[in-house]
Image 1 (cartoon, rainbow, N blue to C red):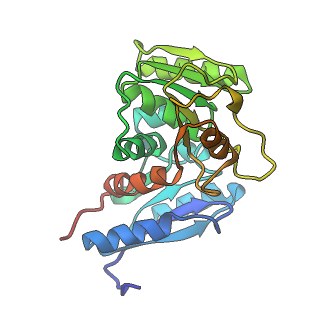
Image 2 (tube, rainbow, N blue to C red):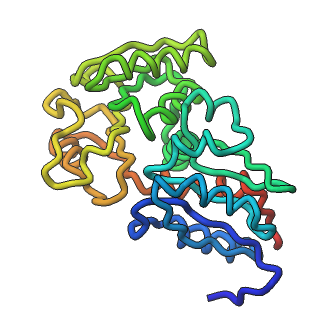
Length: 267
């Protein structure tokens, strides 16, 4: 482990529970790679204590900012001083930069990380049609990012249709020319199929969509990192589909998060 001194810049991740987080490991690897004198540590904050924790973080002069994950991504927006327009439209944030005087600025990078993960794998989104299962959490950010990346058509399918309609309206408020439809569990007729829900984290979870309608020419994507092979990806591979795992979404967010937090390459 690197030597921590009085000059080391401090960063954290806010979560509840905290045991599963992988971001501190990846962020500290990034700091070492670029020669930055910083350390990222887990901050276990329960929802009822979040406001008090954030108020305390404001007063830490050597804090560069925090990464935010479940269940705090929505609540954090009410506790910061400013947020980017896309974070406000999404209604959630996952990174907060602390500026001089304790001012806190939030942004959402889940969608950008997901898109960059696809692009890093050689997947071009321009002109492709995309099916998105889910309309909350990560799905919100992914919907915005897919449209920003140039998909020709986005179909949003959610168990609660009103949530899908709400996400559609918010995306259209930033991208009025986008072609967005409300879908069913049937993902057929799309180039890209994305699970933006948490279904698949537990062994007894239902599938987030009708996997029997998947076709071999579709790319099926996950946001879930554990387990690596979710039931959806197993079903997709059985039907001859190519798959894209959840891990690249975090891997590609690390550099984006560091940039948002003001981390500079020291090499």
